[in-house]
Length: 149
Image (cartoon, rainbow, N blue to C red; front, top):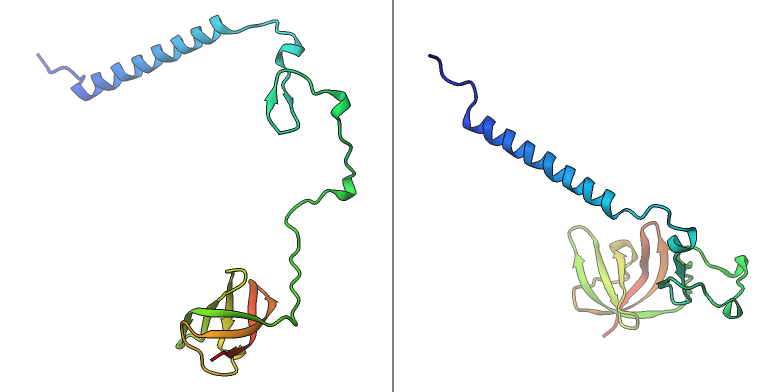
């Protein structure tokens, strides 16, 4: 007599597969039993109120607001900074070997990139500086950076 070709692992895989098939069939039967065919369109509709919440009741037509398409803003607004305004900030990081760093603006707490070419004197971390801002290729960058005593 030869050994059985079915190993323990094969038997376990077959049991698992049959169990999954049975669970799937039970779920399908449950969905069929709970399906509510023949619902009217009004029963399936959902409305959005003025606060953006879903509700089953339609909104009051007297509270309807009219918006002009031209007045709507799509996307983020363009930020226009005045380049002539002199700002103040503190250098929170500066790598002398690579020649760049970041200044934290005292007014907005925004991090502004600074390159060594824009320095009028040597700066180090925690120095208070004055500078102007211009739009660089990757965001705002500081120009005309001067150390404040």
